[in-house]
Length: 298
Length: 338
Image (tube, rainbow over all chains, first blue to last red; front, side):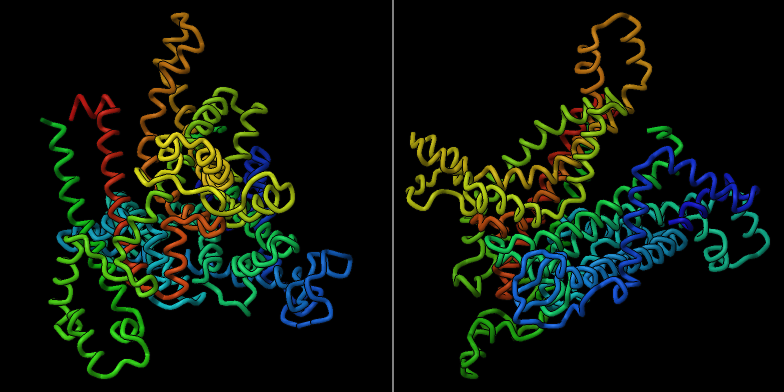
């Protein structure tokens, strides 16, 4: 997040070096403490993903049939599941499937969207029109219904559901990248590069992309929260991660069978989803507000 | 006259979108691994039966012919036969649609009735306690996993407190109201059966609360943002300077203008509502389209899944078209300039 904020505030604070940049970031964060909360949540999730084996007290897949469906206790903070696996450990490890899936979805749709969007803007003419009309059609459809149908057709698995959601998210980034490219194309530094005989690809790589990326990254951060929810929801209805994998949506789905007597089973994985999505949304909003001068102190 | 110049391209676009839906669902149904003829005929069907099923479905023809058949069936309202229920998908959807519409309508009304005042109050008392509460609610609404929230409410109000039913549309012992509109609330009132009406109301509370909460976040946030924009306008300052009452300024001058950009959002929110309904219905065993499609997904009943996708997409596109036209009529700038 630091890199996002610092790279985008570069123009403002570049001259003064990293120390003042850090100071600038701190100033903005202080002005909206919720952004700080979001950043802390995301930081914690990242730590959880990276250091899962160090944090989790048990092996998430180790069965312990003598300790089935235990309520939360000092031994098992979040209780145990129907075959005695420690739920706290499963949720810690589950962050890998859930968050990495969401991150991959955003990464795939941003990469493909940006490539198509930039190419469309540069090629122009009929190809541009055709691509944009196609994107209009896809965007006019209810994205999640389409993702569900696609994921069902590809066959239920985490990778397939990721691909399906990524596919329906592409058009948003195509539009954004195309708009950015079109406006940058008219800027003086791009025209200058063109007069010096730089090839279109060179201009795209060194002049357009670096400048087009910050609004795209902001959009991606804003989307991340929603996508964590979608990925979990697809697993919940049985289209995403399949049972033995520990993934938050799938954990809630299994926990549902025990909801009347074992409340902890579906409560904790759901809380993990809620907190993560909230972190993404708070951080995304904060970054957007920082970069949008029009919004001022809002 | 000028307004037609805006509306006609939208109808042309509508045609392309519907065609796009047909192409996409056709491609998706050809992605499915496995032989659809075998799925219909069953595992033990003989070679002749398979051939005849294939001929019936047109699967022995070239892809283009198959697509033409598919489109012509769609135009005739034929969405195929469900592998699970063995009935026509169109008929199944007609059966389950009113339940979803009833749930969706109630949730939409709830979220608008709560969301607009909350958004307005949040903008007027910016950074005050009301604003903080409203913003917390809207962030929670946006970040809430719908399916989990539904489960938590079931746990709380059904399993622990025993005050509200946790599944279905109506109590087991009560006879269903005669189907007139398919909306239990309306049908039971038309029949004058208050027992059925109250039972339906009680069953609606939890699912519509879940669905409304998710939507509430989006609506509150949008109203707040556009109110803040409008409140900075010169005409508001002028109104204030000319000594108009605060209430008049807020409701007659500011809110009316702030609502215009929110109309478009309403159309888009319907997409979320549809998706949220799928998840909510699953948890509450609500006999609507959502439960139908999730059961179909779990049993790999592709004609049903594609039928749902087609109907949902076309419905969504149509509603957004209506919303856009409403937007044009609501925005005097567009109406005048055209």
